[in-house]
Image (cartoon, each protein chain N blue to C red):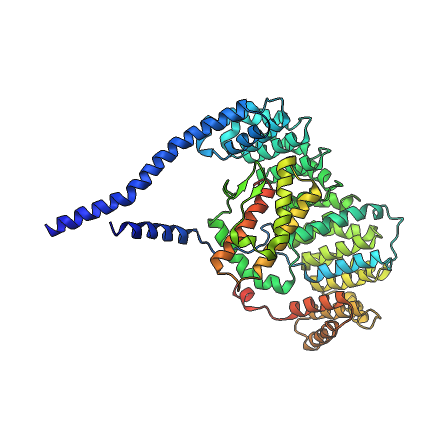
Length: 369
Length: 205
């Protein structure tokens, strides 16, 4: 009897806890259906901000795909460009559930209104259609004269990942853009390709409008971009622009030991340059490559007595990197860097601090990996 | 009946506990996303400073010279957006980064919910903890830019970069405040801003 009472009490407690949840869920479901119907009505028969807001809110109703997507799709034909772009944006929220709208989104990506084009590109990316028609349309949109549209197309292509070969022409164009944000987007996409970007990077290195950007991408990609070393050597040999030379040297530094074939050119550029920072970048590259070249070693030792504190410090750092087992060279580097860390020149102080840290043994978290 | 309030409290507590995640720090996810520019950054900056001080002898007959300026500007904006961590900080962050990547692999960053962000008006409904005075500059910048985006349909390149800079700087500040907030709260704060970043990229990132 006592067991039965306890059992009944348990059932009662369970019902008390669960019933409100069930009742609430049922009411919510009913009101949500009514809510969608009201939104659809406002989206299709309303006007102005009220209509746009209803379209936006339909994008949140991914639980009602069959009721909402055809409505949004139909609205792509509306005369009001604001209705069209709000509808594109909401369609994108449905991802691959909105595939039926792809043909019309492909029309909209060539609209007269750049905002409509922008959201058509974004929606195509979100819908995830990787057909040739979509990739070609997006690649063409990368060359759109409106930088926002171009940026949206790059974002969509990055999302769809068709590979660098299919994006090559579009990326070249985007990297030549005057809009900083567009170039940043394209550069980000290029770096994401990693090793696969090398053929494109070799082309970009040859072009005056993209060579510096290509160097920055190579620096970011690092050793995986080792097949750009011949291109970087050509660039260093040809260019007399110190900015470009410095960035090319930093790219070789980042590639590391695989950049050994560039050592002779690095020495030549450092010897000819009239910009005081070029030999510093050259010394940094030689140290990062860890070259065993005797001429390089001699030039670095020569640099220790040059009237350029920054160069002396980086040359000492490079020699310590090249000869990791030479305690005297390491001590010399530590002395120069410690002196540099007390310099009046902020750049020298900052480089000295970073140099000291890079010569120090790795800290525990890094060693644990 | 005396157990009913207890049941509801238990449900609320359990639900709340499940919502608290781990600390998620900032950082890139691309091939070179965690690359610390270190000495390279200093050398590049020194080169640019020499140029602007006209200390360097630049051969302006080089066809590339007059086309370099825009590229330098864009690349600087790129480094700025990525965040130029110094080498020491990068080493310290590596373990956190590893944990973050592991966490993100299983808890993918979601888009902002309609309760958090009203796309129709551009209104951001901030977490209370992000509404504190020290964060005014970042919050105001993002509020303004998101409302502008809602009105215009998109942001210009400069506006987009201004928004990503505000977000990056705010996350950098928060990542130094791990002694001021419990890990779960700090995680929610950073995740909220990361979700705004994702919204800025039209949830395609």
